Image (cartoon, rainbow, N blue to C red):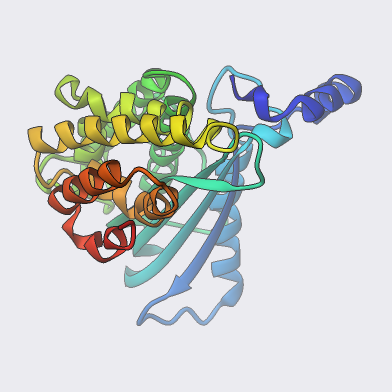
Length: 305
């Protein structure tokens, strides 16, 4: 389904054989220190490498991804506290992108913040992920977001294409919520206590009442952005329909984290897509709708007019 973008890469894989097979993610991890001091700089480098290696070398799916099909993912981790030796409190920003067909443009598919998580790390103990059992909060966090990234990417290429990956993310939520209580990594992000955490992000993605959001992703990317170069007016119509569906989902659940993540990733892009349109009525309808569901980015949408 993604090989529309990668005919040449696929041919190279056939020529080079199995050694050219790539994993699903092309992730980079950057770690910063926020109001904390770690005197051993090599520890931060090892932590960063361990996270990046787990994301890039784990086999997350049964699909074969060519090198050009790998999902680009950037993860920014900020260490905010060290409550005890080997235990770290952190925030995380994640941005995942996908190519737009026929262009060199990479569009954001997911842009989210994890405001607080805790994990243990020792340079002498490898970070290992298990699909069905708790191996530590850091491995769970990385696995959860890996499946979320793959799921949303698949949703953008096929209608509800990411369902099986959200199912796996839910397994991680369940075993992590139960197991972190046995360690010093107790993490409220796996439970339903805060409506703006991992638990609710996944809950929103898999809620049948919010299905219009996921079908909207397919319309926005596959029926919209991917044909924009050849048929810009048809693409705008598809994107308008997608945003109307997302609007209906937001009305069902005002303030949902899912909507916030979407518009944080897409506000600038939406403005750029419609700014050059000659359909004045469509532009007015769009700005009126977005001003209701995403008032925080109203200044950007006003430029569409």
